[in-house]
Image (cartoon, rainbow over all chains, first blue to last red; front, side):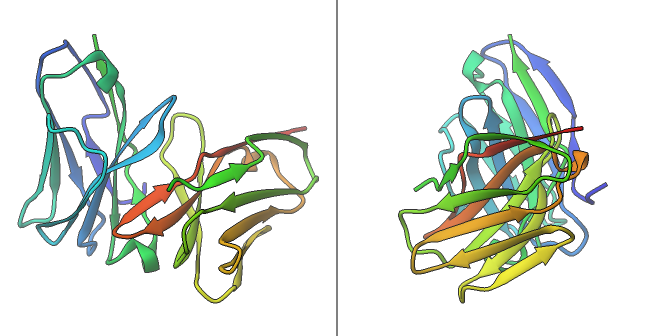
Length: 114
Length: 108
């Protein structure tokens, strides 16, 4: 157990629907990162929050949004889902900047859009 | 800006050594190494900061040549548990980029 908790582990939904993925970072970690991993794309950075504030955005679609709450948990909202959104979504946390500390990943949410 | 790893895949027998290379087109402040087993989350192995240091983790070590913008991961006397996909990761601006990945399979 890495200490980073992601729910749900699996999600199957239809095209056009909206889902919310949840992440609780490791105790004491202020940074939360979201990554998408699909077979042909590797690990793609989506977004980074530090202590409730958005710090960096990667290749995140406009249909996707995220936030980090005062208790530091984070949610990734995916809307108007398409078949191509099927992937593993990982949350990772870090005490501060990843430059110094590295990532601790959660076990991921496998999203299947049908 | 995604770092390029080589080789893409390697198969080893238990006890053999391997080297995985990571090369970036951008100046590097740090290089990370992670291992991911199939269907699982990536696991942090080590981080190397600017300065050309070499680090070790059990029988896995790494070097970082900031001038050449390259890092190498060394696996010695490989064990079955070393199988997985290895990713390097580098920082560019305010983003972090994972490498293209190297699939390592250790067979008995």
